[in-house]
Image (cartoon, rainbow, N blue to C red; front, top):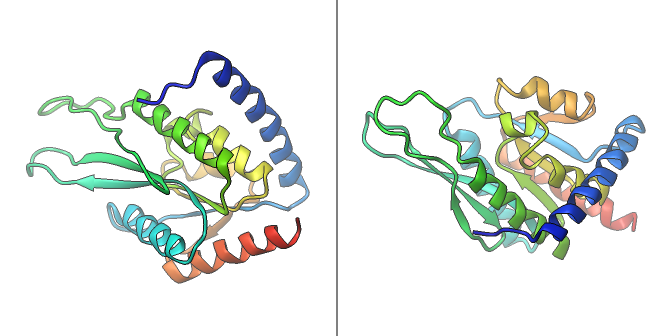
Length: 204
């Protein structure tokens, strides 16, 4: 499992703080490069973002981030949840097996933070777009992929995140209302990311 050394973690925390300050400046100048999308069916957002990432990579874009892969188990059990780190892996199991009838949170926060570390490292190597499978409870509380999102925005890299109704308000608070909400349409999402990526490249 990826564990950044203490010094690297501290340096990344400092950078993410500066990045977040820069993001706030971008927000207030109405120059945001972030959008969310939400499909109606269970697991539909995950499938949409997985297909979108694959299409963008096939076109030669450097796609960074995560997509979620759900694997069904017995009918009475919840699915296993894995995230694949883009573009080349690894795939990390982020769900815990709490046993039959368990009602606690199934998210393995340590595994999620390991995925965050891999994505942060990939972002350092360069990216055209960032896709995050979910702006969830962890991000709403200021953890998870939130620093990575801030770093991408500070670099003018367009960001697309999946979101659900429970965390929509937290996402809007994070973007101070300047993030776009896009329909769960593969063509619209692809066009938005490509256009924003090309605009950022032309501005360099």
